[in-house]
Image (cartoon, rainbow over all chains, first blue to last red; front, side):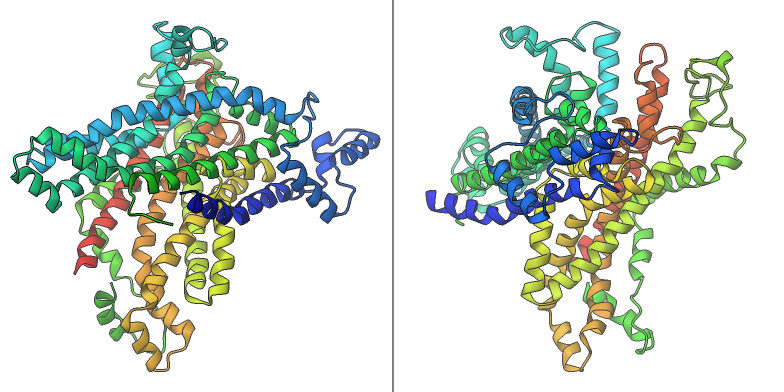
Length: 315
Length: 295
């Protein structure tokens, strides 16, 4: 297993390098002169020159690239132009929030979607396809609901009108109940996308597995349906579900950016948006790199879980 | 797919490498795509006809009717400065639909060209293209669009380009895998044996067989682009006022959630409806493809 881990990680190196190069180029692709764009058009020439100096834009391109790569590998993303804090510190304080709502949403959607999909497939295989068809339609529709719109609707109905859940306020890490209430709305909104995808994939995967010969054999031997489902069907259906869940993580990450800003959560997304609006490019750079690395890492982890869940698959 | 397209090929003079459009006829027959088109086409027509419709001017402010709920005069209500929400949604439809279809066209176009080249030409070209594609696919879609908009700035074409950049890699990948599959088929060998040049084989045989799946995907790209554009505009990064888009309409209503819920709600419903329509069209095409592929 360590062999395939090493091999997979090695294959990622060109991609990671490419990602860092792309982010490096983004700042230098700005229309016009990056330094004056960031400092503002009306800034005095001295300020623009100082900005150019601090961004290192005076040095030759290869030198800039080299120092960018070496700094990034040491997790030195520079300092924020707006408040002077090291970007890595800003990321560190925001990361727990984003990870919290991200993972809770993923787990929540799994807990709901997998049983729904499995039951739908089971009933369909028995000939009672109504639930299955209903679920497929509902899932298709809710997948297309704009996340931020749903957030506003739920905000109105569950928070502003009825005061059931808070819309703003700090995250109280020490108080589980208050924390749960605070993240309930963002989690509900974020789970919708993965829920739809996971339910659909689970249903398809379980349906396919239930048609396999070994299931028919187990039933012929008199195994109760419940055991058939849990011990055989779900295990074999797990593979595509895990893969899709890994892919869905990327969508989830994108979703957190908007949701955090709607619910005023101090996560990475809020810092990113503030950074873009404030033309704080070291912050934007660092965060984009951070998001991309998380995504790459999750895909790597998904591939590895792949091999664990199905020992027949080898890299 | 090649079995079905050959008869049409024979009817067209051999000197012109025209692709065949028999796929379009098949689209018409299916229920789902009909429902989808029944949803999408009227919206497109209304959006295009917008300025000529007998409804209020989307830019006309009228503070005396500020924040009024849905009524006979204003079927979807008014906003804070008295603008009619329905006309704003129709005006926003033009922008959002334009972005959606432009992104789909660019993404599918670039995907077909680059994917075909990558799949058909040498291993080196393929490795080079796929390495770049992998780098772009390492970013979550919405995030890449946000980053690109941060670079390009706000504005319609900037948004179109930003969203297209996140869809093009996926389109390239899809097209490439289809081309790789077709490359080994006997009809390609037959064409080569008939001394057909590579470009002819590509344009006349390979690409037409890949058009239908790309249409399936194009519809989804359009729906996705409309959603992403709305998200970007909502964040203030995409299309900014005074030009209306469904995204910034929703943003306008954000501060009036309790006093004017209709301002944000109806544009969101519009996005949902067009997404459903486009997905139905896509499903319809895909359903048509399946029995063909099995035969």
